[in-house]
Image (tube, rainbow over the protein chains, first blue to last red):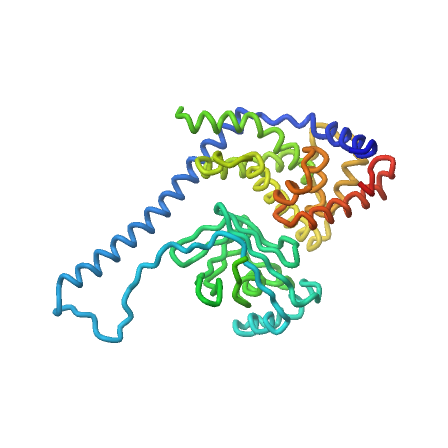
Length: 213
Length: 163
């Protein structure tokens, strides 16, 4: 490292060296919070497993009951899908018409111009979605725009978008790639002149299918 | 305490302070830096059996902490713009080198993080990229722009713009 850089490094060390957190206190807190998170996670997994067991039991009982309770022809049969293999990096290219279509379909068309401005008028924008280890990050032209924790519940992806909200998307992996359908968003309402979180999420996730890279 | 908890506790004691210091360079707020690091280590606890088998579990927890810090800062900036306020922080133990703090504060969140990882933690650009969740070329752009801006504020005797 060159001399000026070494000097900068020393200045940074001087700024940070007095920062001495109480490690023991934080360790206790971390263990407590970590255990609580583990319990919540296990409960979510157990709930999902229980739902599958009940579904299998109900369907099995119907089969054992025979013709008295036969499912009429043409009725969709409940299926239990395998866990989605969704971890990895997915990319998509979003054009102006994609943005307009994604917003217009859901009555959010008034935000189209502002969102196009936020994207820098630089269309198409290249999206990259990375999902791994229970976290996600989505970038637009290399700049991370949303990131946080992600939880897979059946076919739904539950994304934390900020501390006061989550977005739920229905995910399908098929021949077209990874397709999301917007289900809900619980973010606190934004000020009236700001683009609502739902509009941002719809453009980022639902406007076009993602391809695995 | 079982073996996993012992290993986690040892790792925590080894790494926590370093993570807080790095995040402090991004947030310039000691309390929030500790909160972001705390969040990251709580997540690490949940995934410890898997992450501890990685070559660099320290990289994993830094990545989570830095992402949380960058997210906090981005959210703050939106709020400050909306409320037309200056960035408010609770500074560290003393206002050491306020010139450098002000210069860092002028940088966007990703550039602050790149500077902290590259200079304070002495990490190569490949690891900086990994922790920022971007390509190595993007990380180099963040670093280059950060250096340029710091050189404008601090003077070229403090930073090598062409490094």
